[in-house]
Length: 56
Image (tube, rainbow, N blue to C red; front, side, top):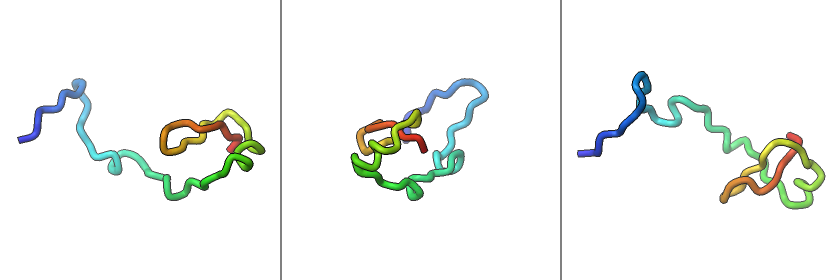
């Protein structure tokens, strides 16, 4: 038996793939030199979180 999950009133428990579009397969890996030429306001994520910021 799984433990009861507590969620706020009016919320539902759902699978992530049912409520979000996973676009990781469209992510273009960039090396350090490429990222340096694209500095901007958008976080660029690696396996351990934000590794840099990009203009795209």
